[in-house]
Length: 73
Image (cartoon, rainbow, N blue to C red; front, side):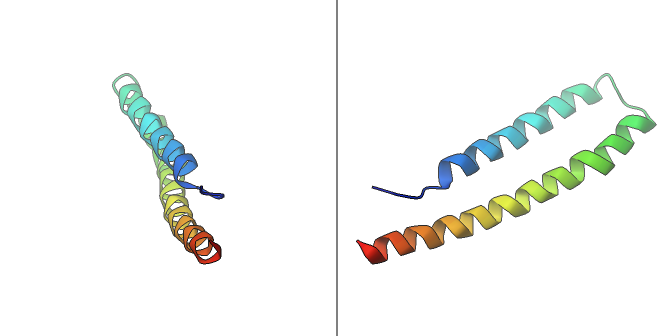
């Protein structure tokens, strides 16, 4: 039994990012001006980049936790 599993929460974060990106793509069908481009570049692109970096770190942390759990079994 895993005491610390970060896979499920990471999966939820990943799915939420995909949902956000889909919603943004739908929004761009109706809102495509200088303001929308600014919002995308200043808010959404950095957010997506940060989330992807965080998910990578969570994956590495999850691997370490799983190794530690196996070591104490």
